[in-house]
Image (cartoon, rainbow, N blue to C red; front, side):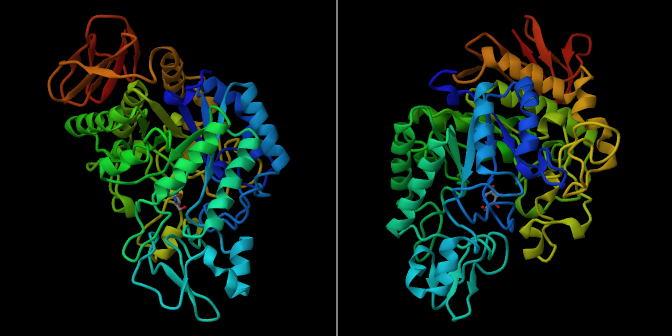
Length: 502
Ligand code: NOJ
């Protein structure tokens, strides 16, 4: 892969707990992932991004990190992680890991010291009086400790926020980056990247954060082709773009695209805005349809309201899953044809729907408990993957999966789909293979084709992508049809369908 592999990469997100279980305890792990590397190679992705794999009490699925330099024992060992990195590299797959700099775990050594010794509280935000900030997960953002002081946690109480005014915190994270770069990782996905600094009135996007990423970029560059990816949820595109200046992060997730409804004008607007935001700074855009925090596309696109809403506002509203599935296939061809990087969240390639009917007793996401059940949380997109067989655990492992899988997933296993040429899995495989040579980094040219309900553009390789979001069939441009998300009708592209034409 070239030095700039990251500019057009297809990056597969592994939510380790739910990917594959190698030791039979019902929780995904490194042994399971290592065993499935050939599947990922065959899928055709160029990199894996793993959610946090560090020792953690799992109050927030591992985003409560107790030790940044080790592996959660339920997932495996540091030695195994090193083996995994080497094995992925042998297959020419890059490895990106999560780093969580905004907060740690109440079970981290630093926080435990802070509790027992008031003189080392400056690594966190301890105050005699809390302010009125609310936690992003619900409830107050402050929790009181035994001696009467309060500490800040923008997320769960088990996730105390670091104080980035303290140089020791900078030092610590620079060291953590080096620790993992030295072990061969190719990059970091930076959690809550815009939240690190706090002022009296705000905790979002303070200017000081950019100096941190400039320093991190120097470290990454000193290792060669290593990359930094920001989780930056900012509606203001100008502020967003500041994170992608040439001496800061390499890329950031495109949450506007992820949240965009299945609507031609809105999609066109978001794509144009994305391209216009990235072009002047020379950063590649990213195209993201889902991740471990949001409703799966098959369910979302089947609803009357196809936007993504935080807080589970649309949870349980009716979804026509057949329609959602058709649109998710078309959306995949759109995302993979656009210029830049594309992300595939595990299970997206299997067309898994959101599991909306999980029994309340099994829900583990702190969003659910912190909202007194008003928000169902994110467990529905984190259900362990179905690999094979006719009944749960569907080859996920030998134990009972940590979240129950629906019986109906027997039709959606990787095994069943591998054998079906028309499956979502085979669509992803074909698209990723074509994408490697014909798509990725670059630019696009819009084509005036088929009216306002149609998105059509061509890429440098000559590949044209046509997505029909109208209610009428659309005539395709002349050329060889390389891939379609659904059958053509008399040579025309039906509604909610996409095609790649050469
Ligand atoms: C963003 C992560 O994607 C999410 O899963 C997590 O809960 C929050 N950051 C807090 O770490």
